[in-house]
Length: 151
Ligand code: RB5
Image 1: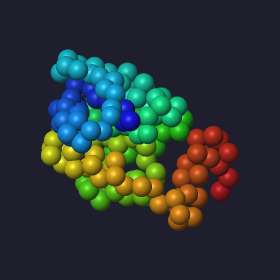
Image 2 (image 1 turned 90 degrees about the vertical axis):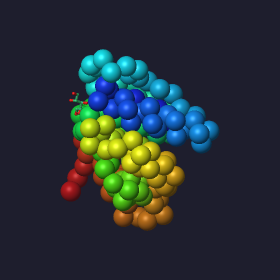
Image 3 (image 1 turned 135 degrees about the vertical axis):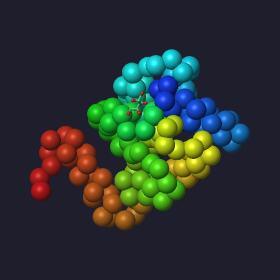
Image 4 (image 1 turned 135 degrees about the horizontal axis):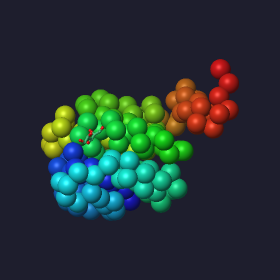
């Protein structure tokens, strides 16, 4: 189950991603927004990121104008690794190497077709959990978050 959210700058991408999810029978919950009226991206990022961090959803997809603001907001929630992606390689690597749990994209910088492609790659790529260096690095991210990081 995927948690979705956007602000007005990312509504077009979220709409395209919903079409892709429905065509592929992938369950999702849409946390808004639903119109092009201006909305503050943290108000969307926070409930989506919290629901993913709580384990209610496997992963999330958030879209704003650039993908940046909404990713910064999501990354403030403990347990979230939100990545702004703008190419196929990034979509794959942020799953394989960073175990990203939220994909972020920007409706003013990424086409709808590309966003669907990146979402498809993101949702179908596993974390390289058998490669110790990646689990070690992702653990370090948690350590930074928890204030226990010791270089
Ligand atoms: C909204 O105009 C815009 O600032 C927002 O969508 C996003 O791009 C922020 O990072």
